[in-house]
Structures are given as C-alpha cells and as structure tokens.
Amino acid sequence: MATGKIIDGKEIAGQLRRQLQEEVQSLITEHGVTPGLAVVLVGNNPASHMYVKMKKQACADVGITSFAHELPEETTEEALLSLIHTLNGHPAVHGILVQMPLPAHIRSQRILEAISPDKDADGFHPRNVGLLAVGAPLFRPCTPWGCMELLRIIGVKPAGQSAVVLGRSNIVGKPVALMLLAENATVTLCHSQTRNLPEIIHTADILISAVGQAELVRGDWLKPGVVVIDVGMNRRASDGKLCGDVAFQEALPKVAAITPVPGGVGPMTITMLLKNTVFSASRCVA
Ligand code: NDP
View 1 (cartoon, rainbow, N blue to C red):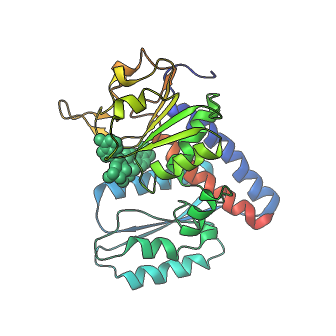
View 2 (view 1 turned 90 degrees about the vertical axis):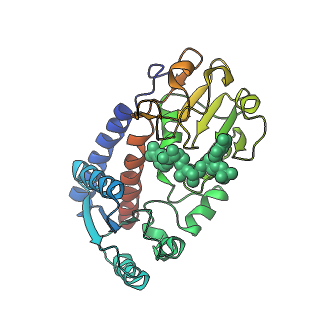
View 3 (view 1 turned 135 degrees about the vertical axis):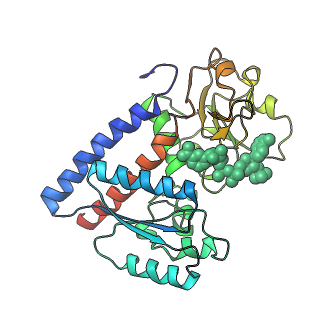
C-alpha cells in the first residue's frame, strides 16, 4: 500500500490540489479559460459560513475564480431560483454550489433541480444521480468520490472484495455504494433498521461508514486487515473532541488502513468539488 496505516487525507488532498493547480494553469494559458465556481449561501448558519470560507480559499489556492453570493435568511425561493438561472447562463461560471442546509422555507430539492446538470459541482442534480446509477457518471458527488479516490490512491482495488457501507443518505451512503458496485465490489448497504450490524461489519474487506454516531463501530467488530474509510464527523460526548463513527484507537491494531477524523475524508470533499469545477471548465474547451 502506498501510504502508512493511517491514511493521510490532508496529504493526499494536497497532492491532488497541486495537480489541479497545473490543470487550471493549462486551461488559462492554452485556452484562455479560468474555471469559475459560484458559491451560494443563504442565511446565517455559522457552520455553513465556515464551509463557504474554506471552499473560497481552496478555489483561490488552485487558481479557480469563486463568485460568492451571500444572501439574507429571508431570501425567497423565487429569488434564489432567479439567481440560479442567472448563474446557469453565466459563461464564467462552470460550477454552481448551493450550501446546504437552506432555511426551512426554501425547498432544497427544487433548488438542486434548478442547477444546470452541466454545472452541478456537487453532483446532486437528479440527472447526475441517474447517470451515476446507470454507470455513466458525469459529475460525481464530492464526499463519496473522495472516499473512492482515497482507496484508489492507497492502492485498494474494490473488485471482488466485500464492501460494507454504513448509512444510506443521498449525499454519502447511497452514491458510495453505487461507486463501489461500479468497481465490482460486493456491496452491503446498512442503515438504522439493519439487524446484526457487528456480524455484517465483520464480513467487510472495505468498510465505509457515514452514520454520524460517535464511535459506533467497535474494534472487535472488524475483520483483521479491513480498510476503513470513516466519513463520520462527530463530537465525542466525554471530551467534546471531533471523532468518527469508528472507535479509532480500538480499530488501529485490526485494520490494514484507516482514515482519521479529522484529517481523513474531510479534506478530500472540497478537493473533489474543485475537481468537478475544473472538469466542467475543461468540457467547455473540448
Ligand atoms: P444522514 O443523517 O443523512 O444519514 C445517516 C445514515 O446513517 C442514515 O442512512 C441512517 O439510517 C444511518 N444510521 C443511523 N443510525 C445507524 C445505525 N445505528 N446503524 C447503521 N446505520 C445507521 O447523514 P449524512 O450521510 O449526511 O452524514 C453522515 C456522517 O458523515 C455525518 O457524521 C456527517 O457529519 C458526515 N459527513 C462528512 C463529510 C465530510 O466531508 N467529511 C461530508 C458529509 C457528511 P436511516 O436511513 O435508516 O435513517
């Protein structure tokens, strides 16, 4: 395996971002196209403000132009739709991201469906979801794609392996299961109604956890030699520290490799957003 037992998502994301920086430079110098990402934020959610700030900084680091649209909490659904239509037609905007969650009076699904599927940097538009499901992805959702990139880069080949996914959300669990299936893994998708979770987890050669419960998965549930990608971002009740869904210290002696939380999947998510934006810009010059 190319990296150590603890998968350094920050380092791997850094390598990918350096490659993206070069791609951006060649788009600019050879084609006169600077990739552009519109980032739309509605309301005052502090976590959303922090994510948007990180995304803008990441864009700047690789040479992508970001167009920030920060709108007040009381923005109407119609006003937001109107902005999205403008961005859909804007030639300098190659990717559009609407930061979730939106205020309760705005229907998120309606907004996601209004984004042009050709500028869908988050990969949430139903057309892109469908393309992923039929095995012909265009824009891939960022967190699941980041998980798959981690596996690829550390040299794990899913084909023929037993992959267990915990969580079936539209943003992580379901798409990562489809991606593993596309790579010929034998996939088991678990959720809150799954019985015998420890036994199922014990069958996994690859475990991807996206539940959101601190240290749900115990070390003795794991098969020796498993590769663990822990998407969960939780606060541990005992000390308030960030932790994953998998009890990291218990898991460490059992696993072939594992992502830490923080510093595992997190840095990959924004990197894949940048990758989708650069991909979108490159489609304009192809
Ligand atoms: P959701 O809350 O949308 O989904 C959680 C899933 O876990 C659901 O499918 C739920 O099942 C399932 N679940 C709940 N309890 C159990 C259980 N005991 N056993 C098995 N499955 C269970 O969460 P998200 O997918 O949005 O996020 C999951 C985690 O990943 C969160 O901690 C989130 O913060 C983190 N995250 C991290 C990102 C990153 O970049 N690092 C990006 C996105 C998310 P059911 O469907 O039956 O309710």
